Amino acid sequence: MLESKAITKIFGAKTAVDHVTLRLEKGHVYAMLGPNGSGKTTWMKMAAGLIKPTAGEALFEGQPVGIDSRKSVAYMSTEPYFYAWMTVKDVGKYYDDFFQDFSYPRYQALLQRMELSEDMKTKTLSSGMMAKLKIAVTLARDAKVYMLDEPFNGIDLLARDEIRACILEYATEEKLLLLSSHLVEEMEAIADRAVFIKEGKLIECVDLEEMRGEQGVSMADRYREIYGHHEGANV
Image 1 (tube, one colour):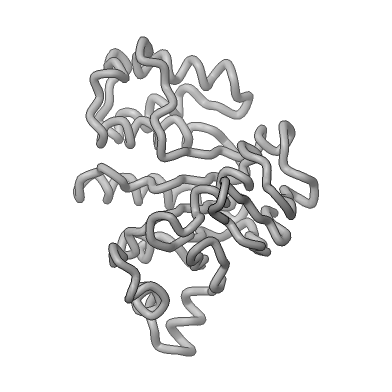
Image 2 (cartoon, rainbow, N blue to C red):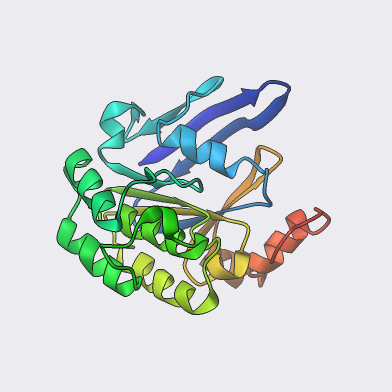
């Protein structure tokens, strides 16, 4: 459903993503793993059609990503992207106007689960509340692909449980979910496949159940093998 072919992105003297060929299929929840600076966010933005690759290409259902694919791909960035004047209700209206697959009733239900109210102003939200708002407005779309970049950043432990439950509700056979994170334990409870990226290069994409059964190692074990020496690696 979503793939990249030798996709590369260079910023100045830094190669953020280096010839990554990867195919992701619907019906799975993928964890894209690696320490900060591994290239996860850059790959996701290219796959979402938000930035252009330096070389290679990203495809959605066999066609180059672009305006059409954005109608079916719900991407949540790590950066805040709401106007300061907006209330939580304004955020929902903005998405409702912009995306045909947005469901305002679903958004309201997700807000309730996230313990957010529509009259809250975005400029007064804490980092954790902002993170929950971004997840709510993204999951309120009936997209084919959901890409959440660092969805647990700034969110306390109890709230993470509710967010995991929300995410898993969307893990149907017709959907593709991709979550990037350096918080491996959070991903282990959600994902059934893992994509390991290191210094812009794809290390491997594995079926977690097969890896556990055949090799006797968990996602966290494999993460330690790949990144254990990397300063700041979190498991």
